[in-house]
Amino acid sequence: MHPIVHHPVVTKLSDLFENSNLTTRLASTLASVSPYDESLCLRIDAVVCTSDNIKSNITTGNDKSLPLGWLSVEKNQNMTTTPSQVTLRNFPGSGNTVNSQPMSNDGFDNPKHVTVSGLRPSKSSPMTMATEGSESDSDTGADNRLPLPKTRIEPSVRQFHSDTRFPQRKKHKKDTATPTLQPSSIDKFIAGIWRQVHSPVTLSVSFPDRTPEFSIRTGVSQTVFQAVNGLCKKYYDQSQSSRALEMIVQAYWVECYEARIASIRLEYPSYTNAEARMAALKEACTTLTWHEKELRNRMAIWSGYKKIKDSGGWASLIFAGSGIYRICKYRIGFDNGLIPRLHHIASSLEVAADTLHPGWRDLLRVICQNGPCRYSGHPHEWVTVETGPALPLRATYSHLTLPNGFSYQFVDDCVIDENVFGGDDPRRGLQIDPDICQLCQEKQTDDVVSNHCSCFSTLFGGVRYPPPVQLYSTASGKNNGVIARCKGFDRGVAIAEFVGIVTRGIDGLDVMMGGTPDQPYQIFQGQMGNFTRFINHSCRPNSQFQKFYWRGVERILVVSRGVASGSEITVDYSDSYWKKLRKNCLCGETGCRFAHQLET
Ligand SMILES: C[S@@+](CC[C@H](N)C(=O)[O-])C[C@H]1O[C@@H](n2cnc3c(N)ncnc32)[C@H](O)[C@@H]1O
Image (cartoon, rainbow, N blue to C red; front, side, top):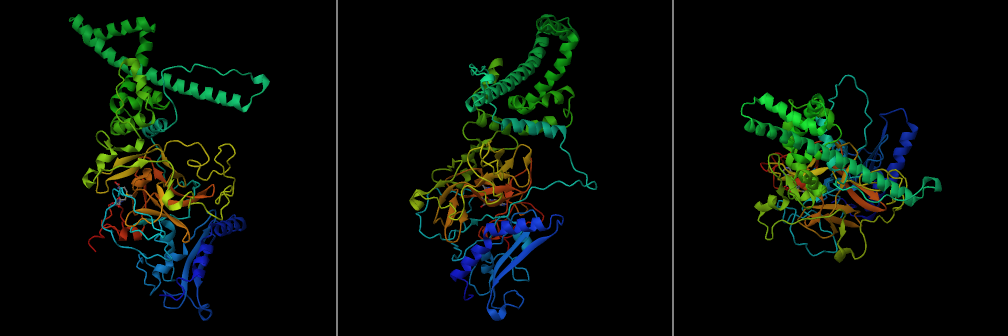
C-alpha cells in the first residue's frame, strides 16, 4: 500500500485535477492560441511523489511516486479528464482488487483506451470492491426489494460510471476519395414515417371550433401571439389529419373498386374482365365528375397507397410524410425493397402509433375500419419483435421466475429516495452556479424562451419530443435491447438521461455511480427508470454515459457517438463491470474483449 493513498490531500488534489472549470479554461486557451493548428493538444500528467523523486521518470510503479492520473485537452474539445483515482487501483501493493486495465509503460492508464470509453472503472478512493452476489445476472436489474439504505456507499458488484468527455459534433470535411453512401428514397421515406409518428401532431376528425378574436392593428401581445400559434398548430394538425383521411379513403377506394369489378362480373357473366373494369370506372367517374384518364392517373397513386397500407399497416400510410405522393406516383422502390421493409416495421410502427397517438385509429372510422387499440400504455412497455407482434415487457422476463413477475415503472425524471436524503438532492453541485452551463458558459433556464444553453437541447431547455427509440428483442442471449428509430442520432447528441431512483447503499445490483467521492450517490433502475435501463453493452459502442450539469444538478446522459437509424444503441459497461459478470459478451464485435471470459 502506498503510504499516502488514503491521505486527504490526495483526494483534494484529485478533485482539483478533475475540476471541469480548469479543463474548460485550458481548452479555450488552447483554441485561442492555436486557431489554425488542428493537431495541437495538451497533456498534463499528475504524480504525487517525494522531493528526491521529482526529477525521475515515472516507471510502472517501481518507485515511490503515486500517479494521480492524466488530463488531456484537445482543440475545440472542452475537456478530457482522467479521474485521478483510477490509477490508485493499479498501484503496486495498494491491495486494491479493482485492477482491470493494463497500464501504459509511463505508469498511467493507456490514454487511448481511457478517453475512448465513456464508462470508467470504479472511482473508488476509500472503497474496495465487494464480491458478494456477483453471480446474479441483471437482465432483470430488478430485485424488487430496495435494500435498507446505509449511510456509507458500499461499492456494488457492477457499477456503471459516467465520464466528462463529450463526443464532439464533427464538421464534415469533403473527402472526394471516399464515396459516401447517401440514403435512398426508401430510406428517406421510412425515416419520414418514423419522424412523423414521433412528432407531436394530434390527428383528429373534428375541426377546431373557436378562432381567437384579435386585431393585428392594435398590437400583438404575448397572449394573442400564443393564440395564433395555437391556431397554427390546430390547423396544421387538421391538415395532416385531412391528408391522412384522404389517403385512407383512396386506399380503401382501390379495394372497393376491385370488389365492384368482381360484382359486375357476377351480375353480367358475359363481360370480360376488361369490360367489367371499364364499367366500374365509368360508374366512379359519374360521381367523381372526372374524366376517365384523370381517374386512371389518380388510381395509379391510390393503388400505391393501398400497397403501402397492405405491407406496413394503416399506421404506415397515416404517418407517412409528404414524400409518399412522389414514392407512389413514380413507384419508387415498389419492386426494390420497399414492401418487405415496410412489412418488417409494421408491428413496431403500430406500437409507436398506439402508444404515442392513442386516438389515431379514430381516423379509420371514416371507412368503418377502426378497431380497438392493440398496444396501450407507455411506448416502452412493449418489446418489438422482428417478425410478428410486439410482446409485453413483463412477458420477456418470464424465464426469470421472479416471485411477483417483472414490474417496472417508467418515469421521466429521477426520483430522490427521501428515506436516505430527506428533502435534499445529492446531485446538486455545491460549487456549481445553477444559472450557468459548465460547458458553454451560457445561461440555463427551464424557460424555453430565455434559455441560452443549447448543449443538450433535446433534453433540457428546449422542446422535448418522445425519444425515437423502442425496446426490441435482440433474439440473442442479451434478451432485450434498445433500437434507434428515425434517422438516427448524430454524434454528440443526447439520447436520454439515465434516470431511476437516486439512493445510496445498494449492493450487489447494477447501479450508476454519481456525485463526488465526498458526496456519492447511486442511480438504481431496478424498480423504476426509463429505457436507458435496457441499453446493452458493446465493445465498440455507439454511445457513452456522460455527466452534465443542468441548473446546478448533475445529470448522467447517454450521448451518441453516431448512432445509425435502425441500429442498436450500445454503451461500454467497462472492464470492471464485466469482471464481475459471469457471462460471455455477445456484442459480436471483432475486437470483443469479453467474448470468452467464462472460459478463462
Ligand atoms: C442493463 S441490462 C441491459 C438490458 C438487458 N439486456 C435486459 O434484457 O434486461 C444489463 C444486462 O444485460 C445483459 N447484457 C448486456 N449487454 C450484453 C452483451 N454485450 N452480451 C451479453 N449480455 C449482455 C447482461 O446480462 C447484463 O447484466
